[in-house]
Image 1: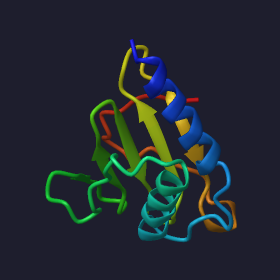
Image 2: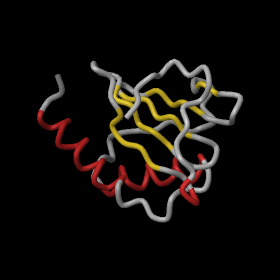
Image 3: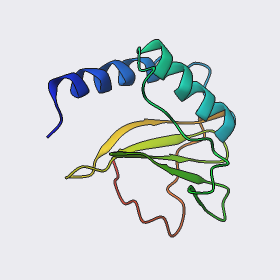
Length: 116
């Protein structure tokens, strides 16, 4: 169970993520957009590892999975991304299509199974 403060922070972040416009055209753009949303939400104490971090899982389609404390972010190469809440029941926290409406696609072989 998350504290009230954490739930409020996550709510602020979701609100700021929903303001991303235009949609990102690459995983790097999506990463930068998430960092900007975190700043707007006042989450300066939260961090997001670089896409190049060796701890990130990489997939053949160019997708990168960044695992955080209780969330994972799957970045598609075309800019779409999905944030998955890893706490039970493991649901989608946020998802955004990439440039030109490129839908998010869970990479083949990705162990994260949360779906809409």
